[in-house]
Length: 143
Ligand SMILES: [Zn+2]
Image (tube, rainbow, N blue to C red; front, side, top):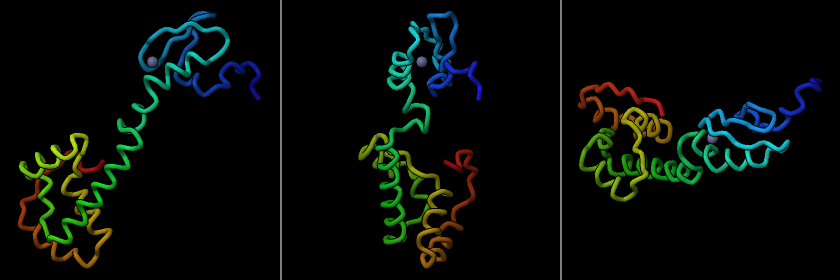
């Protein structure tokens, strides 16, 4: 119970500061908007400019798309017994980006984890291939 903070009832206030009695500033891009005791213009601004960008940088449909592509990739690795380091191959990467410029390929480590999680039986075969590949440090190992 904090009656004094009533104006913060709308969650959009997390992203705006009241800088004068009739002006607010967006905390995400510093844009100033008029404020008339309602949050509709703030909400509109937030939704139009920041909502999707805040989460993962990808829209939900892109996230779903990535999941589909990852699954297809895992299945290809298992069925064709491809080495995990195919995701590091310049030619393969170029091919994938032609197919889908928005596609972000998983790292070899991430791909390995996905394959291991899904197909225990394929693990040993795939592991043998991976061990031939020298360990490469990947700073973007988790995604
Ligand atoms: Zn903004």
